[in-house]
Every structure is written in C-alpha cells, then in structure tokens.
Length: 547
Ligand code: NA7
Image 1 (tube, rainbow, N blue to C red):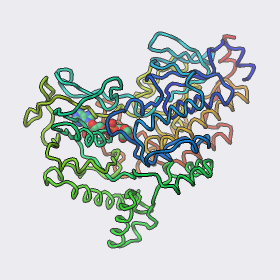
Image 2: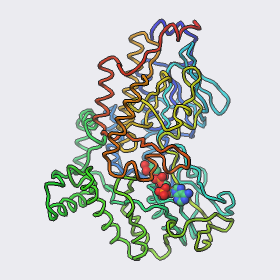
Image 3: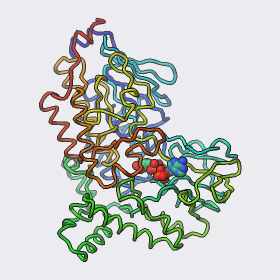
Image 4: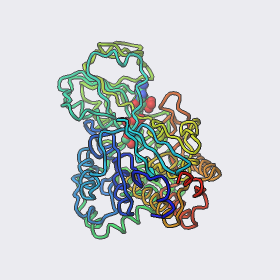
C-alpha cells in the first residue's frame, strides 16, 4: 500500500465486495492475493448469487459447465467433476461453495445482508457502504459484483396480491419450503428461459398446467448429456491454456461446432445441409461463418421455427409457440430438450396472451379476456430488471454527491462496462455495455475481476488514490456499443430485457457489448498497457484533504 493513502482518514478495509456469486467469490480471493484487506456482503444466506436464488425446478446452465467455471486455479479444474455438460442449479451452487471454501473466502463475507447505499467522499477518496442492518463500512475500493439478473421484475399485473392460493417466483424460489405442486392446478406466467426450464418439471407433478405466454421464444436443443472423457482430459491437461483460449473467443466459450462455410457462398441445398449439420451438433445458431448477417440469421430463424413447429402436435399450439415476430437472438433464446414436447401432454395448455390477454388476478385464479382459469398455484417466471437493475436498486453517489440514478436516468453509461465517470474506484463487473449475458459469464467474471485488480494494483504501485473514466471515454464507449448492436438483427427493435423493454418505464437502451469477448478483452488491456489514457486520476491533494 502507498504511504500517501495511509495518511488519509483510515478506512475499515481496502476493498468491499458486494455479492458472492461467480464474480464476487473470485474478487474476494483476488483481493487477498493482492495483499489487500477485503470484506464481503451478500444478500443470500449462502454463496451462489443467481445460482442461489433461482432454485426453481429444472434450473440449469445452458452453456457447457466445463467452460462455465473458474480457470484461475488449475487444481480447481482438476478437482471438480461435472455430472452433466449442462449442470443443474444445485450442482453449480455446490461448485461455488466448494471454490469459496477452497479459497477460504467465506469468513470474509457477511451473509443475509443487503447493501442499500454507497457514498463517495471526495475529501478522503473513500467509499462508505451502508447495509440493511444499519451498519456502515468504509473502504478504498468498491466492487459491486451484484450480477446482471439479481433484481426481480415486479409483476405488472392487476390483482397480484389478491390471489388466495400459493404464489412463487422462479427468481426467488423458496429454499426453506418444500414446494408441493403434486396434483395442483398450476398457472405459469412467462416463457423466457426460466419458464421454459420450469414448465416441463412442473408438468411432471401438477394435475393441470396453464402456461400464460405473452411472447413466443426460440427454443433449441441443449448440449446437455454425459461429459466427454476426451474433453475432461484436455481441460485437465492444461487449464491455463484453456483459460487463455476462452479469452480469445467471441463468446467466452469453446463452441462444439462452428459452420465453416459462409451463407452467401452456398446455394439452397448447401445452406440446408449446413443448417442440419449444425442442428445435429446442437449449435444451429452457428450454422454459418457469417451467421450474424441478416440473411443468414433469417435462414437460421426460419429453420428453428420449422423444427419447433413440428415437435408440437396440436396445430393451434404449434402456431402460437413459434416466434414469428422477431429474429433469432433479438430476445434471449431458450434451450430445452423437453419443453416443446410438454405441450403434447393432455394436462398442459398454452394460453396465448397475444390473443387473450390477462385482465387481472383474482383470489380463485387468473382472468383473461376470454375466461377465468381457476388455479391453486401461480408461478411467476416474469424475469428481471436486468443488467442495470441491480446497480440502480442501490443508492450510489459519487463526486460532489452526484447520484448514479441521475447519471443513468436515460440508460446506463460507463467505460469498458465496468466504471462510471465521477465514481472513482467503483467497479461494476457483469454490468451494462460489457459482453455480459451474451458471453460466458464465468469467463467474463474472471476477466473483469482480473482487469479491476490490475487497475487497483496500478494505483497502488503508482501511489495514486483513485481513477475514474473520462466523460469522453464514456461517450466513445456508448458509440462503440451502438455501432455493434446495430449490426445484430433485431437487437434494437425487438422488445427484450437486453434493451430494457421488459420493465415498464425503463429507458430503452441496448445494454450488451456485441463486439465479442476477445475485442473487449483486448480493449481493456490496451488501456492498462498505456497507463489508462481513457481515465482521469483522482488528485492526491483532493483525496487526502482530511489527512
Ligand atoms: P425473461 O427472459 O425476462 O422472461 C420473462 C417472461 O415473462 C417472458 O416470457 C415475458 O414475456 C413474461 N412476462 C413478463 N411480464 C409479464 C406480464 N406482465 N404478463 C405476461 N408475461 C410476462 O426472464 P427469465 O427469468 O425467463 O430469464 C432470465 C434469464 O435468466 C435467462 O435468460 C437466463 O440467462 C437466466 P415478454 O417476453 O416480455 O413478452
């Protein structure tokens, strides 16, 4: 630690990490490795973050777990056996606990504690973090590892509180109650990834299932199944090579298959062959090398629609379940091997809210424009105030009391997806305008936390109290984001949680950096290599005035 910093008002610790999911656990370990004194706060009673809260039946990863994992410690890679290529929620949470125990970070975390505000003092260069139990802790560096999908969206339906039966949210599935759906009439609202995973499991036990679908989604087969021993052997032989390789990819994953030919170089027969090959390899979105081009995307979308349609027996249901209104990738696509077939069961019924919208919820069930559906249980799979929501839920103030929610009133702004102008030493992994939810979040967590601590150690080594991005850098990053988003079919004009359209009143802005993981990684490290030209340094005189 630099002597200048020690002269300022004494902080309680060097670093506070909020959140104990993938990014938070690694940040706690990394801080310790850097010789910094660290404390953590976590809202849940255990580690896991998203994987702690979303404990609904059927919750599982839909990228390969052997990539959706930590690589910073080769021994962790060698010590953990995944039971399936796409592990379930419980297994992922057990994995995160295993890593947290192995890294000995649990003792630094205060669980069952929500951070309600964070305030920067220009005079000291320190952050004061307040929690729901009324305590304040002062630190020099604040890492909000609060995830992109941790702020559930309130269901915007009239009469939600009137329902006399049981109501559950997939985003905060009870952990202390044995949810019993056996023989019950269950209504599920929402057909995003959570609904698509939960509905087949609910249908196994419920007497009747009513699925309330507002927008149909693309559903393709998962790559789940037994682990391939050759893949395991390759991972274990050289985990650090895999770690480097993941950072060189577009999505932070090792795809099982990528079409080698370009859509425009193929005739109709060749395109159909490429689509089937990719379908069989369970990577149909990557059927062509230029799959991101509108014409290629249109062919992929149409191919998936046909495959979906033919799996559902009832013609009306098949027509409703297929997403005719947006291109593949415009919304978060879903993956399941059993969802579509669930509609072939006699006790499962789709209600299309496009045709017959929900009017209100009453004590007995749900009233649509066509009928009243009596229910014992309602499951809300209605999603999140995604990406920017978890940061907006806290009261964060920066230099001269500027409020984050004012700075973000027209949508989030930042530089490189992790820092905001006038909020020195505040780091936002997994937040807006990073590859975030459209990359492998575990790869991203390690990359962003590494970059954050590279910045922190640069400050320490140079005796600087803090840094934050310049306003110009932030404007540049906004433009970069828009430039890439404009190239993605449907990104800007499909209603989606990627652009805030799912939350009434939320500013519409595309919040995912679509330039690819490698480009993002390279841009971060170009800053580090040039001593952070896109940032402003906090002056010592300013930050140490109180000393
Ligand atoms: P999503 O993907 O936001 O899905 C939420 C679903 O709920 C979606 O089908 C919504 O329809 C529907 N919804 C939301 N509000 C309503 C109302 N008021 N009435 C009817 N239907 C509604 O959330 P998930 O939890 O499924 O998935 C989030 C991510 O978690 C997922 O992508 C993984 O990365 C993990 P809409 O499409 O808005 O018309």
